[in-house]
Image (cartoon, rainbow, N blue to C red; front, side, top):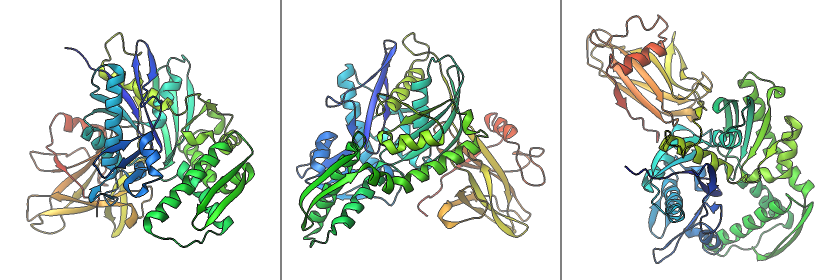
Length: 506
């Protein structure tokens, strides 16, 4: 049987990249002749769909029918785009980008690409990961693994270094921020702590410059229509992004935009001004660094190396603040490609681990980015009972006992939460977990089970406890379930689980 080639894909907010491991090395896959692909889609009236550089160019003349930075909203069922009488979702946008990569990679490699490892921010939720997986499948790809971006970067950097290291990966992309600490022993990569912000990235730095321009020149021209307003805003964002890039290498830049919103913009922007307006955003990343170091039970001196990942780390202020807080970081020449390279190494291992063409075997252990639990009453006080704790190794399993309170009760409702607090908050609520039971006069015991698979996707189950489905001896009076024994019983099918879906739209 002929095995196909599996590739690694970094599906980014601003740019995406792909790579393949073959002939003993990793190589980037060019897409439209470039190593990175703008994560932009544009829809023409004749039905043609543009993806990448052509779409980004069109973004500035037809922003209402173009989609950019959609990764920020993937997994949000409420986010849609209305384009040419069609309703599109962030999953649709991601699938178009992935399909473009699939087609171009197949051309470059000379055979159809059917499998891929796709990277995701380490701080992505289960819903965001599931949505990414669906986008891959919609693009015709078998998703071998969803690999956290910092882990992918660590694999690309640390493979075959033949020394033990404690690596911090500071990943600031176009729309998301992650910071992870990994223990690297040989070619074993273990994530010990992760933190981040899925709504913090280069776009936010650009927005600070845009607001600075608006305030500086007191833009107040009459807005003619929605299309013109959208076009003008896009021109401002483009100018802001270019200014930010120029200030990565120089101390001063001029922003020139003729005839926009009733004025002409001719403004000088210095590196000092950019750093000042960026400071609140940078401080957020430092707060996350401090939290993740504490979560890992380490000190900053324990960090062997800091790796910068993501295009936004080209900003001098980012490099300076990381140096001040931890140590001088390692900055790869291919900062936009390193995540895809790590994904390609993982893809080769998963696709054909026994072949000579695969890299040396690697072991990866990721961690849960968010604590998950259910709402229960404890002595008439309603609290969140955490079933899976943050930074637990993935895959993970957690369970709790619950019971019916009334005779002939048919179901038990358990609110599910994603939070670090034991105080329930509606903003942290995932939805209602409905456990159906056999109505009986006396109370019926049940077990609610949360499982996170190797991709970090949440699977919910329940089991009604009965003489034929017992858990006697596997929990104490507090309702704590022995997770190891529970997992063994599930694998041995000693208890029968009912898979449950949870409505996260609620």
